[in-house]
Length: 324
Image (cartoon, rainbow, N blue to C red; front, top):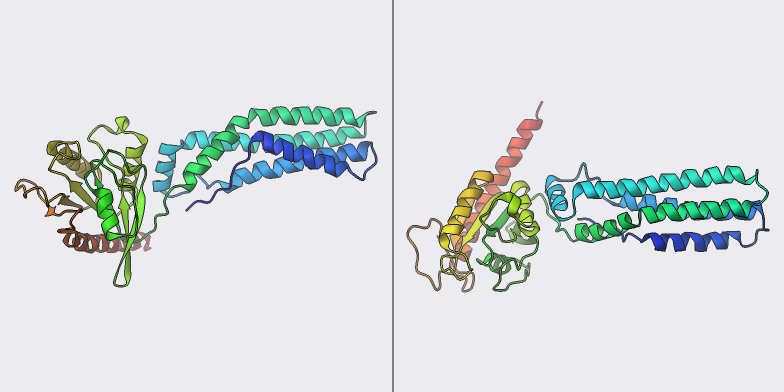
């Protein structure tokens, strides 16, 4: 989805600018022309590179709500905007400083003095934004790692940690999420796809959720909340009644009730590990085993129908809203 280039450090940019300014002086006689070439070259290198850093980040005010919420959770939208603004300020300041210095060169006896003063001020400006550049490169790595989600019928697979979500996604798609017997193995949203006739479906494996207030959820859980709010046409909520996931059944069912109140999507419940646990009459939903495959196809076929139905209804509503 995103392909932001590596953000150089302040020292890397300074080294590049001053190195090329020395080359610009070559072939010119010492004096004002040489110092002018050095100032303009150094400043142009820095201004161009700093402005490029800003341009390569997405417009944070117009990106999709899912990405906006997720970036805010993982990086901090306000912090990102502040750092981008600081880099933009530095580019403008260096440009103004260098042009003012060029105007002074013709009025001084020793142009090298002006050049050294400009270089010193440029160095101070770059030191002021050094931390911003470092932060932007870290943010760049995080943003580039976000999954590419598309506008096609989408199934969200949720539930408590270690109930079998990733196993379900692995069984029905080519996605290969990490699977292990400890909570929060899934560190972010994992996207897979499945083709049925002429329609492709998107399957999203959500990080595990715990039954607790939103302000107490960690960044991994908040990624799942963002996906539930902005993506998907149907939610598969997987329940593990055996207790082997580390959480009792009552906790899992309470989370299901809470999510149904918050998320306006159809929910399908699947009771996993049917190969080792007899059916519990008090639990609604399908019975399946992601280990043996029992019941998985039945669950999947129902999900595909519900996802296509919901996507069609949502498209029709959108067309009605756009109609004059």
